[in-house]
Length: 283
Image (cartoon, rainbow, N blue to C red; front, side, top):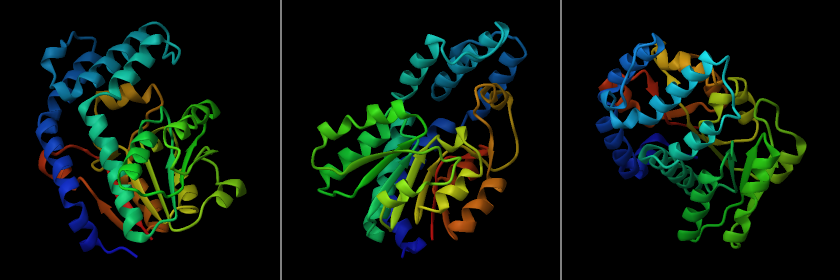
């Protein structure tokens, strides 16, 4: 269906843009790691001490630590919604989403995919980006946006009015559960499934469920390759963002998708950053 050489050639420009941005902005990541430890130790850290790339993480850490002092994390705190909205507008988050949808659509074109699945639709930013791309390229592949929250899907479905020529479907699916018959009836293979920061809030077992419906996957998550953890990992664990260790993830991926390509390995190799952020795999 797809071979690595062809994939690398077709992704070269997208990959060069992404890696260039990441290398430039992540070269000083240890400054943030050290600063997060100071914060966890109760020491004052000014935002100016931290590279711009990590300012959103800094604000998150401040709120998490403040809530811990007040008795525990509270998702209803209005600061949380504001931070999510701010994070979605950062250059990295926009580039990350743009790259995920670009790769997914390229895979769909290469394999003649009949269905696209997005898991964890969230605010619908990734869904909108995919619909924009398909419309600009005169492509209309059924796009199934899924989420574990029905309110999310009710919001996403409004995008149909903006993109009347696209085939947007929705389905309530918690990826921690096996895909139901209703979902399976909505899709036709080959299937490209993509996500951004959704497995972070799920469990490793969700890859077993994903493997039942997808032929190709694009995973946008922070997979830890070294096992090295820092204070910021501990802080984000308090809000349900569990470290994802690639040594645990990889066997589950390979069980269903024997071909894989780590899109941003160069960033990990060049900077010593413990994480990778984009994995492509296919059957």
